[in-house]
Amino acid sequence: MKSKINFKEKRSVKFQRDPSVNSGQVCYVLRFDRKTRNDRLEGFTLIELLVGMFIIAMLTGLLLPNFMGARERARDASRKQDLNAMKNALRIYYNDNQAYPTGTSLDANFSSYMPGIVNIGYGYTYAQVDNGDGFRVSFGTEATKAEENGSSQLKCGVGTGSTDPDIFMICGN
Image (cartoon, rainbow, N blue to C red; front, side, top):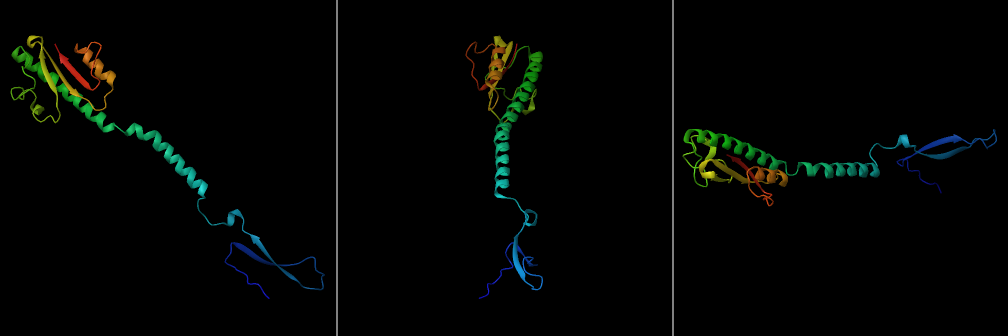
């Protein structure tokens, strides 16, 4: 009974003359040689894929916390710039009127000094202090550090010892 040879296997088939047989006789031996590492199909092994995925996961774990909160920090920085512009506009108002505006918000009378105040897009608190010779403007932050908020409040003379960690403040006197 002859066995069938599967030539689609990943082995090479060689017919070689058998040296152990006498020289007068002809005998061929069928040998199967396994393919070497260089002959295998191209591709990545499971271990290589797992190592690659592990490296990507580690980089993501290290970098993701740095990017989270970037939008909130950007909004806080923009609001701080708005408050500095408001501070400059309030000082110009003081030079013209010899007092800062009264009330708890800056209304239409102040809009000629800072036209964008009406549509500023976030809530702020304004307070006149020292009988019109000073002011405080504050807003709630999203991602600013509590130390920075506390130092801004201490500069304005608010919260000696107990500051609100979520409020940034500017003042003028």
